[in-house]
Length: 223
Image 1: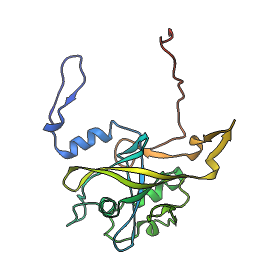
Image 2 (image 1 turned 30 degrees about the vertical axis):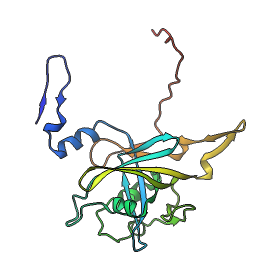
Image 3 (image 1 turned 90 degrees about the horizontal axis):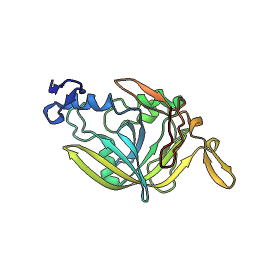
């Protein structure tokens, strides 16, 4: 293992001296919780594909961008790109649904390495609802869904890279949207979202939260 430790300092791992599996383990066991992008696409034959990705986050409001890291296909023999990435690059559009605790098992089931063209949503017992601005559908009953257009693709390695998607429309279940003094309010805790945690098979629930308000400078004295 390419790691060293000096007195009174944390263990250091020099990333370019490590193999892919070790680099991946270091990241996913330290950067967490990570939100999950449940990505839905359509291939050139009109078949729907769905898969979850946890290298994912929002990247700004103007333009409204989502970033998704999609690795190369290392499981299915003869495949270089994952279906999601191939379809996004070909069609230039996709949807992202966020995952509630109630849908967590179904989300994990859609991560199975199904052959190209198989309908993961149907196999997992999930239904869809039409999008308004893009062809790929939204996952029904998801608390939040985004209709996205490919803004930029950054290839970071053969068969994989970073997808930047511009959000064209956002759909939020009516249960979580309200109005307070004329301002939009979203009940995020009630969505009960899940995200990836450390190690294989572990997830976080968004119901466990900590609230700390920002303060002005200079900082207040603390005992």
